[in-house]
Amino acid sequence: MTGPWLFDGPPAPLSRPGPGRALPAAVLFDRDGTLVADVPYNGDPARVEPMPAARDAVEAVRALGIPVGVVSNQSGVARGLLTYRQVQAVRRRVDDLIGPFAVWAICPHGPDDGCTCRKPAPGLVLAACDRLGVPAERTTVIGDIGADMGAAHAAGAHGVLVPTPVTRPEEIDAAEVTAADLLAAVRLVLGPGPDGPEPVRRAGVVPGRPGPVDPAEGVQRACRTGGRYERGADGVCRTQPGPDRAAATRPGDGTYVVGPDHAAHGAGRVDRTAGESS
Image 1 (cartoon, rainbow, N blue to C red):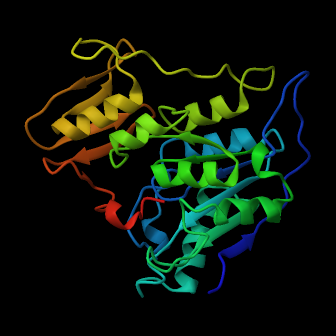
Image 2: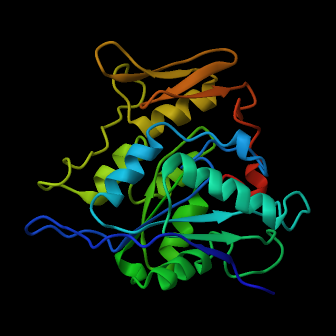
């Protein structure tokens, strides 16, 4: 069996950390549901839509001279739904919209192929780190589902979970670090210092009590109830239960339509059983 597909981009400039500031050696992003809206088995560049603030988040990492990469499961290849050329076309479109990544590591295998690169296996993360010449233990992986965090852990890297309506509650509970959106995740990764903002910490959640809720829990609660999760005029995020389909809006103006079947709609139905939100 062949390994992952690897695509190289331009090298990152030298890192410029502030005084006494430790930065990651690299930051690797999941593609679908993290950098771009998840359109299952997408081979059409015209359907690529960046997630809210994705370019700003990635640029904040690039500005510090930290190499950025993408690690993505694309089992549509094994299923006969995607070709190498289509995967390349979508990759180029993402680079056009968000900026070039120093490395792309893509698993073309199916969930039953027994490969070592399909997340949550560590192969994609390790291959990307090897290509960049950085240690995995100084690398951070940012993604939206448990498979992304599992791959980071298996490779010895750090992980930051950015929940979306397809993120399962148990995946949020198991994550060591969560962030409300991609910009918040990058702030956590870069940490405090003269070159970056203070890290964002998770808000407390008081079950059964109205008022502010943790962003990750807010998205999940909206999914479970078919309700709405949104930022109010006072800047506080709250969930509102709903009996039917409603829009669950994350900070950053990202909108997800949630049906009574608890599935996310609008950007394409996500088949979590196949693990294709990664």
